[in-house]
Amino acid sequence: MFESYNGFIKKMILSMHKLLDDLKWQIEAGIDDLIGDQPNKKENSKVESILVKEISKPTESSLGISIKGGLHETRTVEELKDFLLNNNICDLQKSSKNLVFSDGDSNSNIMIISGTPDSDEDNEGMPIIEKKGELFNNILSAANLTRSLVYIAPIIPWKINGNRDLTSEEKIVLIPIVKKHIEIINPKILIFLGLEPIKYLLDNDGMMKMRGKWLNYNLEEKSIECLPILDPGFLIRRPEYKRETWNDILSLKEKIKELI
Image 1: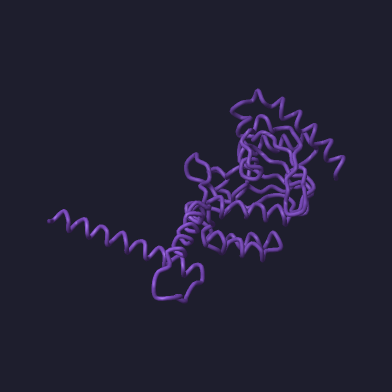
Image 2: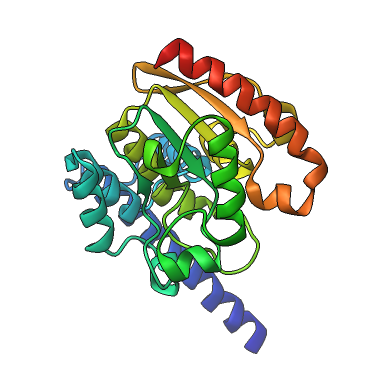
């Protein structure tokens, strides 16, 4: 008797959950009128089919949609920075000390997208500093460039705690920010520094195969030539790859002569 009663209660709870799910779907779909007094099996079947499709489809969070709306209104670097400082973007923002926004000349034709900020960058609010920064400055010098002649922005503007990739929700919220940043700067040449920029902007994780090759980054109707090169942090750990980077810089110098 007791088991039978429990089974009855479980069925009732499942039925209630189904009714709530159906009601939620109807509200989101804008359905506010009931047609007929009896349930229509054919229509119910159609609803179930749509529900299955919707459940299997990746969706954007309301926060992601809201951020895209805010980004659409930004036209300048200053407006983009203010937007990031004055809005609740994601949890990474709360756990970071500083916004790591950019460095260099926002009018430059050369834009460099660096990796996720580390602790040093988070502390200073500046991309590519300390030992990485020293090596990076030398790499720029080999191409007859300085930090003041290029524009540098990280792939995301806040540090990630722990060595991990962005979650799906973080990508939905954060990657549109760097895309907007590129759109505003509108460079003639993009340099992707390390794996993360090519992973999140080109959807490719083969850094060793991609480095040194000129690729196209498509932004709206425009195509920008981009060059993936090895990250200075990686070169500090693996100095034997500096020769490859030197060859990549020679290629960059030729491209600068061609385009700028």
